[in-house]
View 1 (tube, rainbow, N blue to C red):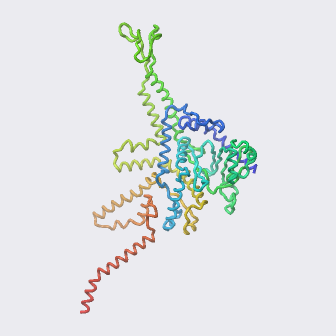
View 2: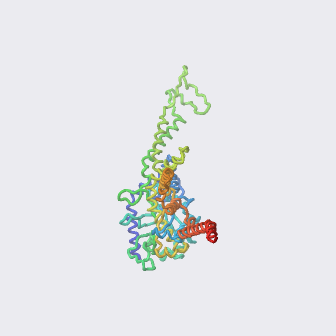
View 3: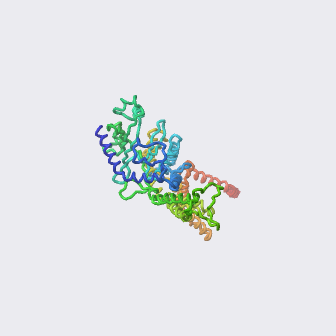
Length: 538
């Protein structure tokens, strides 16, 4: 066990050393964009002063405000709080023709959103922190976990405390997270069964319960994984808690799903950590800060000007009080003997600052969302076109977040809820398919992209109807499969499956209508048949 702990600490130290350059970069960004993170990346926990002011290097707030708006944009387009932004479906499309399977996925999806947005889950606030970190540092992480009282609990992981590595396919599969617990908290975890061996902590816990200890949580793929085993070796990922002091292995466990979904904005060639909008706009941010300092100096000189006087001792009695009278300030001809020092052109300085602000707002996607506000007189068609263009510009950014962070996060959430037996019981058809599923995203961005399919069909239908009206030939409408079209339209428009009839119900309704039509035909034909029978009888 000690060998495992030593190996984990050794690799942790290597990963920590490999990102020293990154941490210098992040510190520079934090100083000017996210000051609450300033002096945290390269300062030990014991050296951080809680609550101290950290805005000394930030003279302009454009980047800080842009970062907040960036986080709001990402949240509203990817994970909006007031709507269901994804759906669960069977991996096998044929299974979705089974109405029971469709209803199960709808109920499972509803359950997932109910637990995710439960007040005690703390999801919304933590995702906002994730997007803040993504915009500032290009890399962010969230930790979905089971709540002690059931359900889910989320925690945004501070980038300073987590280190990770990639597998041969460039997928994050290893994480080393360092955090601090007091002796009392360590003993509580032992009591709850989370820690097995606490070393010498137990001896001093009564005398120094608030003493802090650094702990490493390592999650990595198991080389000895065996699906047939019921213990920790039956988990795909090994989980190890190591006490840094003394290299003590506190516990060994495992996960069926990777518990630390990592989000990266963009990556450079050969780089593990992401690069952010703030890092790309850092030159403009630094220039704007210097310009703001210069403008503040110039503004101060204008409001409280520097005075130029002839060297004749007039300033010995010169007063700057409002309403003061200064004798000798002009000569006998009325010419001023005291002049203001000329200042620079503030208008030119303001124009230069606006140029840098534009660059910063572009980097944080702020200008994309000013279109509708600045041009309120647009027609509905123009609004739709602008929205589509906006979706095209955001698609690469959003797509990466869906595949790299949201997908693994949803997989982890379902795993946690399945283990708590709070999900609905699977129908037999889905059990036979081993519960294989996939995620379809229904965020505003995703719907705006799929709306093109619906719009294309509507335009085609209008053309077909116009042709049929002109030629009086309605056979052109035979090209459309109405059942398939309207089922797909319902999916595009996020209509819940429970609002739709299944195929069996549709067939039953149509059989009923056909039978009613036959009965009506018989009723309509009855008088004529009676007349014929009467004639035959006579």
